[in-house]
Length: 488
Ligand SMILES: [Zn+2]
Image (spheres, rainbow, N blue to C red):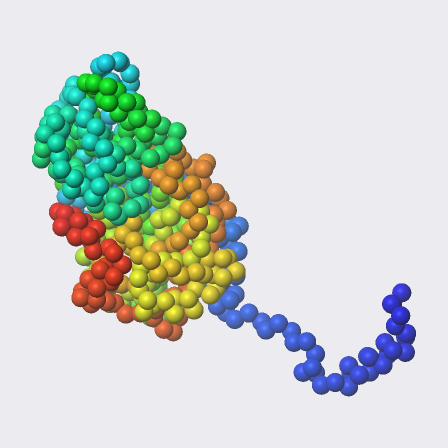
């Protein structure tokens, strides 16, 4: 029964309500706008179709080793192109460029031969030479090298030198110091450089940053446990190792990016959604960056499937060569230099399939307010934040230098660094929910920026870019990378 409310009182309330003007009733929620309707459909499809997960499984299991310049990297490009064409992107195509230095990853083995015999867990860095056949050399403990400019003792000549540079691959200072110390050790006649891996579980690390197009000596990642063992032996006397690293440089080659457009009503202005598809071969490159490729590709398929026609063109670009010197994105910027003023925004994903938080705008304060506004549709997904800090960790560096507004997906990194460039970057560790959520986030971000009345900001002049690099602390890394041999 109704609580203490008599029938007559209910009738009175009904009469009063009937007499009131219709506007005093609670309003029906407004019907969704066409844009809200589009976003709801994009998010719904991203979360339920499973397309990114399905593509990532194929890429990871069929083409796990996608080192830039290899036939396997070509196979990955072909798979992406085929998938785009099947989705209806008839004009999807390759954009080729010259890779000035190819590299083939041979085996790397090492063992202590004196004072005891014991195999070592080691792995080669990328774009480093092999040893001249098996070599037997003394071990030298260099210790921490500071900024790379510490004095080099004469005893490094002919030795395998342990440098206590922790392999924190994402630190610009670390990458710079690594390249400088390698050059100086080679000049001093060292036979090889061991870098102590900071991965757990006796894992080693690899990277080519600072070494492309050709490192000056064999640079080898050594498991931290094995390095500690060697250093204990060295502290007590002479130690010899046997090393056999079989890398080779077959010369220049051809690489390619894969490009597809979802034409807008005004096809002059463009929003780019990008990810790199090259990887390292100890595992499957599933998180770095198969996941990013799967996310962008599935976003493209969903927008196409839903028949969405944005105001401005959304272009999907899949880069090769990121792991060496962002060669693919540099080639893209060179080949599209007449269009750079017309790029509204570039969205890059290379963060692994972890919870998305928002986007880094790499010091572009001038775009902050409008970026926050345009990312509001991502608030219900928890991915609307704007981060001002800047880094050179992926293809964003090319667009920072080109002065174009650039957005990198930021995530809660969880165990990203543990898996990064190791034997455990495998498919089954990728969280399907994060892959789906990131698909929604990237596609909605691209849609929102392509449909906005206002651009987030203009292209910076070269002088403004230099000022930005100085202000964000990226100038040293810029000089290191842009003084290297031009990749095309
Ligand atoms: Zn990557």
